[in-house]
Each structure stands twice: as C-alpha cells, then as structure tokens.
Image (tube, rainbow, N blue to C red; front, side, top):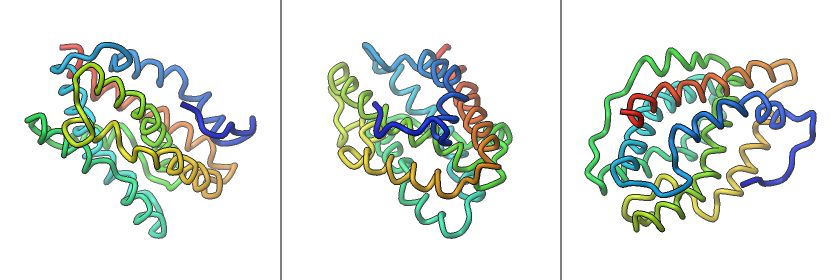
Length: 197
C-alpha cells in the first residue's frame, strides 16, 4: 500500500531503497500474505510483543522531548496487548538483546527505525483483512494490532513522513537508513526462532 509518491531525492526514497531486501526477508519469514494458521498467527503476535516492548522505549529515549508525546500517541503496543489477551497468548519478557542490536542513539536513527514500524502499519491493513478472512478475527477480538488505526492509518503515515522529512537533515540521512536496516534485522532475529520452530 503506497501513499503519496516521494521525490527521488527524498529520505523516504533512500529508506525504501536501503531496506528493500530486509523488508522482503521479514515478509517471507512471517508469511502473512496467504492462509494463516492460528498457532502461527499467535507466534507472530508474541514476536511483535517481544520486539515492541524493547523497541518503543529505545526509540522514545532517542527522540527529542518535543516528539515524545507524538511518538507515544502512535504506539500500537496497546492494540497488541489487547490481541494477546483475547487469544490467551502469554506476553514474552522484554529482551535487552533487541535494544542492543538496534543501537538507536540519535533522533535521526529513531525516525529511521520508526519508518519500519510506521510502514508496517500500512501493511497491517492488508494483513487484518487476511486474518479476518482466514481466522475470523476482528479488531475487537484478536486483530487489533494489524487493524491498528484503521481508516486513520493513511493520515498517520502522511504525518510521519512530514516529521521524517522535516526533522532529519540531509547529513543524517545515512544514519536514518542504517537504523532502518538494523530494525529490519532485529525483527528477523526476533521472529526467526518463533516462527521457524
């Protein structure tokens, strides 16, 4: 799902190009684009809970104070916890290894990392439809995380893009891209033992 094409010299274009292979690898690992079995879906939710419980505090700490409330308002961790409870999935403990692998220390790195999860909210709209079709789950009962902000998702994406372009100077574009790549790699490392077991 794409909203508003970015100019070729934009940070968004650079992030897409830098993370293309990692993005494809995570999608291939998660296998959420076809028939989804209930146990697999629950493992995916547990993986996101493990990842986000480490990722959100790390990103928040690297953002300047004036963006922290903005970041908090974008959190989908509450949706995820709602799904875990609805499906009786135990919340995994936080992993400090994830935070170390992310190595997010600057606002540019935080926003580069956010690109990955903000983009996943767009894809989550498609996954929510697949989950509804294959598992019969709704946003109120087991599919809140992927449904996320629903109709507001596109507006949230555009607002994120605006902050990304305004707050990451050209000199920090590579740092943002590197952080996005590390984020995809940390997602793969988080999910690999959960979904390939």
